Image (cartoon, rainbow, N blue to C red; front, side, top):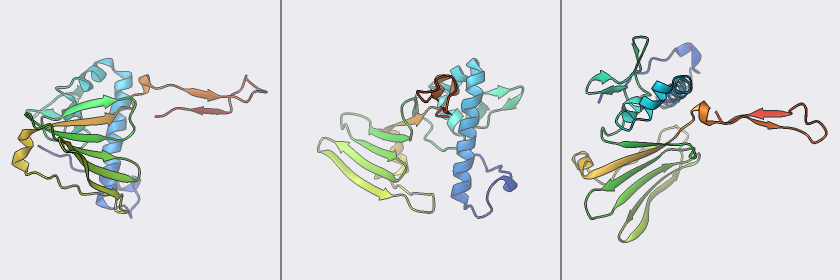
Length: 194
């Protein structure tokens, strides 16, 4: 799988940022750009939500070396993530952090879950013996956390990968206006989640 190189304008990012911080910034920037474009273009939203194309949108923008979306002849080069090609992506409007599941094919019923949150990355295994925590660590200061799966690369074919991603498309959001009870004509707070 081809991975986007960081085409960042160095003058827009703090010079003290490390490579991981720059990569996080790039992926977030691309994902929010995609979300905003989806809000304005229903055809793009439908393409992004098409399970056969969502992984391409999240990674390098390609399926079989062809871009899945072009806007005025310019290809969408993806968000820059790296995922196994057969990953199923669920865009969830009610989640704030991604969760990745590797479920073993067959009758084993074993699932390895990698769950991100603001402070922790948790890795646990669920199977016939119940649930066992593999790792639960506070996120380090370096903005990068390494998880080692308990199987080899060749074994990826023996697992179904499912990624649950937060979906922040503005046309699914709401505007919240907060008023004081003595003045319901002029809002004191206007906010939205995007």
